[in-house]
Length: 452
Image 1 (cartoon, rainbow, N blue to C red):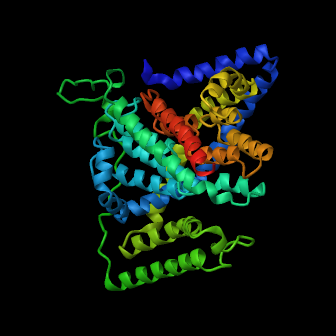
Image 2: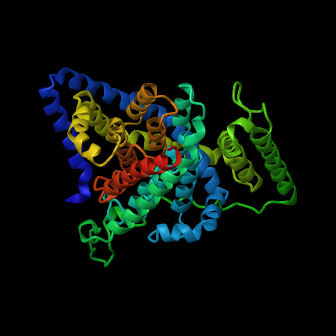
Image 3: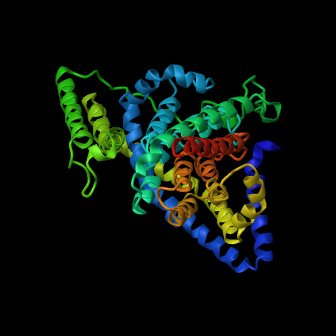
C-alpha cells in the first residue's frame, strides 16, 4: 500500500485544492491554474528539455564508447558498491549516477537532469519488477533529492540583489546542512528497504525456470552501451595533444580563480569574494566547456567515431523527454491547483502554533512547505522574505541555507520515475521528504550557531 504513496499524495493535493478553493471562493483560480500548469508542463518544461537531453545524452554516449564512464566507475567503486550493492560494479549505471552527482555538486542543473534521467534508464535495465522502484533507484533518488552542492548560486544571487554585505556567507552553512540531508537520505533509504512493508515483490517464475517478467529478460532489455569495439589505446602523440588541452584548461582555471579582473564584468575580485568561492566559481564556469570538448577529443584520439556516436546518444533524449510529459502534467497540475486554492496558507495556519511551540521561525513555514512542491514558488517566497527582513538578517540567511540544501522532491520523483514508467515508488517519497526535513532542521540549527 505504501509503495504507491505518490498516488495518495497526488490525489490528496487535487482533492484539497478543490475543497479549500471552494471554501475560499478560489475555484475559478483553481480551474485556471490547472490549465495553465498543464500547458507549462509541456511547453515550458518538457519541450525545452528535449534539446538539453539530446546534447548531454549524446556526450554521455561518446564518453561511454571511449571508456571514460567505466573508468570513473572503477575509481569510485568502493563507495558506489556500498551505496548500490544490487548494481554490478562495471554496469553503466554506476558511471551515469556518478556523472549526475558530480554535475549536481557543481550546480550544473542543465547537465545534471539529463544525466540523472540516463542513470534511471540504466538502472531500469536491472529492474526485475517493471513499474516498481528498485532499492538502487530509491537510494539514488534519495541522494538526488538531498541536493548536495557546493555553491547555492540562486540563493546567493537573491541575497546579493537585495544589497547583502556578504551574500556568500551561506556557502558554509549550506554545505553543512546539505551534508546532513544527504547522510539522512542514505540512512533512511537503507533502513526503509529492510522493512517488510517495502519489500520488493518476488519475480514470477516461468515454465522454463526463469524469474522475472518477460519484459525483464535479457532479450527484451534495452541494450547496455559499452566501449566501442574499435577502441584503441592512446598513442604518444595523442597523449601530447590531450595533455596540451588539459594544460590549457588548467591555465584558464588559474586565471579565473586567482587573477583579479578575470571574472565576469562587474564581478568582485577574488580577494574580496573569498578564495574558496572563487575556486568553486571557476570550476562551475569551466565544467561545461571542459566536458563538451575534452570528452569528444579523448574519444577521437582513441578512434571512436564521435559524430556518429553523439547522434545515436542524442536520439535517446527525444524519447525520454516525450515519455515524461504525462508525469510532468500530473504533478505540476496538482501542485498548481493546491497553490491557487490557498493550500500553502491553510497549512501555515494549521501548523503555525505547533511550529512556534517548537521555536521554529514562523516566517519560514510557507517557504518550507512550498519547497518540496515548487522551485519557482519557493524562490518567490524566499525573495519576498529577504525584502521583508533584510538580506543580512538571520531569517534571510536561514532561508537561503534552506533553499540551497533542499530540493523540489515531488517534481524530481515524478520526472525521474516517469522517465522509466515506474508507478510504485515504494519508500522513495519518505526518504526524499526525510532529507528535506533534516536539511531544514540542520539549516536552522547551523545558522543560529554561525550567525548569532
